[in-house]
Amino acid sequence: MVSAGLAYTFDCGLGGIGAVSFGITFSRLLEESPRWLVQKGRIEEARRILIKIRKIDRLYSEDFEKDLDEVLRIEAEKEEDAENDKKYTFIHLCCTWKMLGQTMTFLVGFICSSMTMYALLFNMEKLSGSIYWNGAIIGATRWIINITVSLADYKLQWFGRKMSVTLSTVITLICLAGIIVFLKSAIGASVLSIGTNLIISMCAQLFLSKYLIVNELYPTAVRNLAMSAVSTMCRVGAMFSPQLFYLVCFFFGADFS
Image (tube, rainbow, N blue to C red):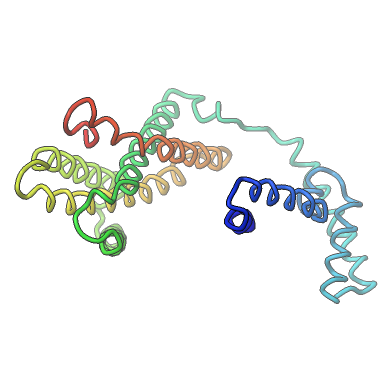
């Protein structure tokens, strides 16, 4: 915000330089997080900062220091025990053939879902009508689909995670195929709007279902690593998704293929 204000005032890049200098100068006044200091073994520094915070809040007392010392001692022991525990890495997500297959399936699936969803979101100006109304309709459709799937998962025994992912994927493929076939026809604009609406809603449901599957499928020791891996793939897909519409230069319908 400061950078934008300075850039507008000076009408040049000097505003950005001033904002960066401003941030660097005042960052020296910031303290490290007490939790981070405890994790790094810097107990005394963490103690000093916590006492400082307590004094700023006007809640400081002599008893607080005694309780604080006990809490810091317990936390330091926990950190020491944690250092002796076995360390897991992303390699452990592929330590068996079964886990390798699961991991690769999730990684590719998240990339594809992310690229499909964000490519359409970043190109909503291609839809007919107001971009604001289209955004509102997409949001309402996502909400309705999410509630419907949640109720089906709760009420129907045969409707599980795999069924949700399968249906969402099939509907997405049908919508993409319909857009490619009818895009240049008389009803192309309507098909594009309806198809894009459904595709984005289905991709949102795919994200929810896949995140639940990852959370339930992987062992506790590597669950956070698995969530980190698939989240990273989502960011990778979002990074490349705006470029998909440039494929139309090669052949018609390439962006939706």
